[in-house]
Amino acid sequence: MNKKSVKDVEVRGKRVFVRCDFNVPMKDGVITSDKRIAAAIPTIQYLLENGAKVILASHMGKPHNIFTEGFGLTKKEKKAVEKLPEAEREAAKAEYLAKAAGDRKKLTLAPVAARLNEYLGNKVTFATDIIGEDAKAKTAALKEGEAVLLENVRFDAREEKNGADFAEALASMADLFVNDAFGTAHRAHASTEGISHYIPAVSGFLIDKEITFMGGALEKPEHPFVAILGGAKVSDKIGVITNLIDKVDTIIIGGAMAYTFIKARGGKIGTSLCEDDKMELALSLVEKAKEKGVNFLLPVDNKCATAFDNDAESLICDIDAVPDGYMGMDIGPKTIELYASAVKDAKTVIWNGPMGVSEFDNYAAGTRAVAEAVAQSDAISIVGGGDSTAAIEKLGYADKISHISTGGGASLEFLEGQELPGIACLEDK
Ligand code: AMP
Image: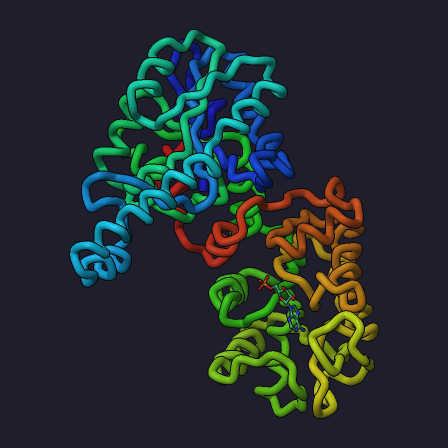
């Protein structure tokens, strides 16, 4: 996958529309973590320093949106409203509008503009609309090396519907589209994909890094290549396992999803989570791995507990001998050793998903040990998913990881080998 980035095109004097991920956590109008804003700075700074006129856009949260045609209601909401008697219908509409108005206050990007200015030295103005009068005036007035942040693109229902008129209106403000929001790259929305139908499109530095590392691992991995997959459900990871089985030397399975495999091969799993309807599929994946000569590792022991509770009574036992009334909560010490040694000599490692209920301290040892093993290996290491990333960061290993992917769903779809609309639409090199 060879896509053009901002470095491959002339940006001086151009109006550049940059789709960022400023979907930051907020509490009472205050940004509680600006990690995503900080991550976006290098691309923006590069554009400003190279004389671009920068138009920044992002979504924040999931607002009720107002769009006069169709009233901004989803089909389901619209049907529900239509069923109501006339008088109540008006009240329902009014209630919806009130919610939308509330969201406009809660989910405005104005605080993001203020924070951007702290990073960029007051180069950013804020438009109170997206494609309205304010946005048009402020983008038209931009000088080289200045930026304007548009209001939350999801305030308009046409953003998520990828409405052609909305995408065209966004494009009409710019000469070049730069996508740097990996977290929404798996969605074909107006500001992530639709806009590319009207103006040339390239990646920003964040998406470029995702493509380089994840694309590189999938296309030309250095071997041995080890994939570590954990988390709650095997059904969430089937696509990833199926795609990786043709590319890796070892697949390591942890987390609750392991128990579907264990039960399928006849093990006793107590009350551990299990997807009974996926057991056959689990066996077929193991079979496929065997055919391809892929080392498919399942836990050999685990820590199990009498309840989904940090302080519940717990014990360590073999993975296929979980006592009645106990549920598997973490991989055990023998498994930790096995998995750590499988990672040790790897040259490429991909890790997504915790080895146990890592949000509870008493069941976090497996996830921590895997984080340590990945950080200590000399491999090109790629980590994705909230829990795995949190473990890496909490242990202070972030700088020992080659690439921490910023998109949950997007990251998984990438590893499944799917084409992400927000990346597919970028120009080839
Ligand atoms: P995912 O959303 O697929 O990345 O899975 C993350 C969730 O899996 C976390 O919230 C964990 O609590 C959960 N999880 C991991 N291992 C287990 C387990 N053995 N039993 C129950 N839940 C688990």
